[in-house]
Image (tube, rainbow, N blue to C red):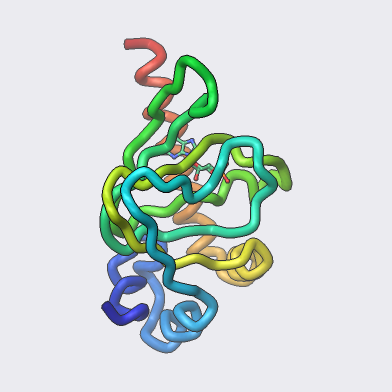
Length: 142
Ligand code: CMP
């Protein structure tokens, strides 16, 4: 699918006009992964930010140990990889393809530059991160 069309369906980019989407799409590289592939590894140093174009991924904490915990499953239009880029820290979890999937990847440098210049995108990313935190908290008190 066309990269602009993919980005057009991504909620955090909902407010962007065609020209902005086009510029953004030029910063993003399509990548494919097979079911079972890890796209980012917990504790690795971060390199990029990812938007799911098709297929599904799961976010797993402790994937390398005996008690892996699935924190979330993310599908088309959702994103991952922002936490380590915000913090300048290692990846908080492993993100693994649960089925063959395609994504668009952006460098950490471009991600930070984009958020610094576009408050609407920054707010949308923040809203999603807060919602994910609430989901984890809700599960803790279940
Ligand atoms: P990062 O820490 O860079 O790499 C792992 C990614 O998994 C993280 O960024 C988030 O994008 C994502 N992630 C971590 N915890 C959760 C969660 N509770 N719900 C959804 N996604 C998460």
